[in-house]
Image (cartoon, rainbow, N blue to C red; front, top):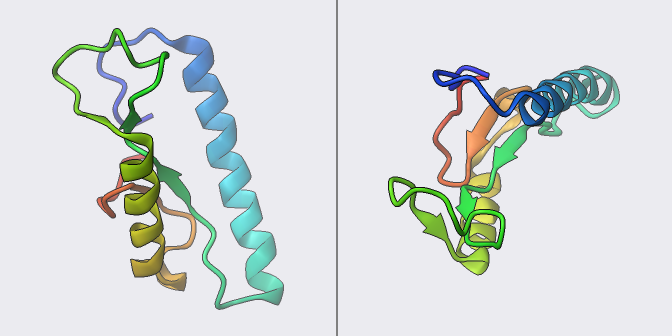
Length: 96
């Protein structure tokens, strides 16, 4: 939501807002019984798929296996202090 400088994609953005609330709620509930758990949102990057085939050349499209490996590496670096946050596949925080 913090990256909405152009508008558009209304329903996609609405679904992401709902996802953000699911992450927030899950984090609160999980923390009660598993305080060392990490509940967060991860952006896999722009993965090279049919959906992203027409994207501008301004965006780097990741091979699916590259995205998966990088996402797993990001997960390994995150700690319970990162709960409720949003990160990209490369461990860079993403503005909600």
